[in-house]
Length: 130
Figure 1 (spheres, rainbow, N blue to C red):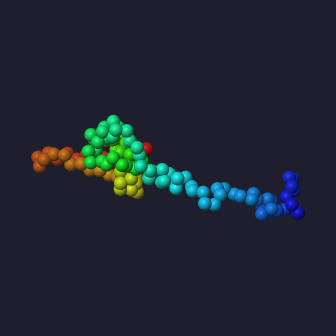
Figure 2: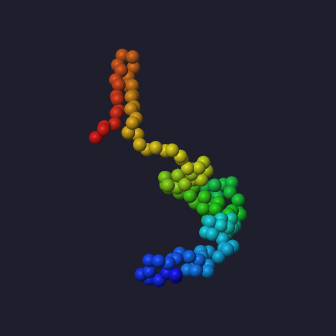
Figure 3: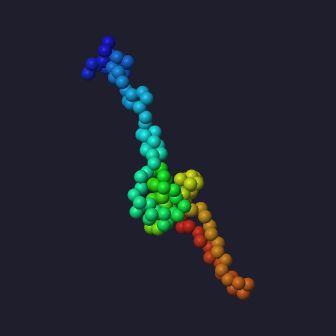
């Protein structure tokens, strides 16, 4: 018995009620594949811009991929503009993201000894359990 509105009996999700094509057609590249192809393209940088880049990075080549140009822009932001997010992006790209960075220091006791032999002050930094 086919499914009809209000009918509690029937095969609602059978093959008869599925569309002929579902999702992307076969062979169509996904977004990641398209992005990688674009990043591999050689960028055409205007002469004035290339000379500005060369003052910061003197050993660069004229023919660079789009990915290399984007990396140089991010490096410029990290170095010249002190952009922490740009720095993190560069470091994550170069060395991989930091794993296991646990910002919860609630169980850490820090003892700092200040002074010489004659005077020894101890500071105990213990988190409050408030």
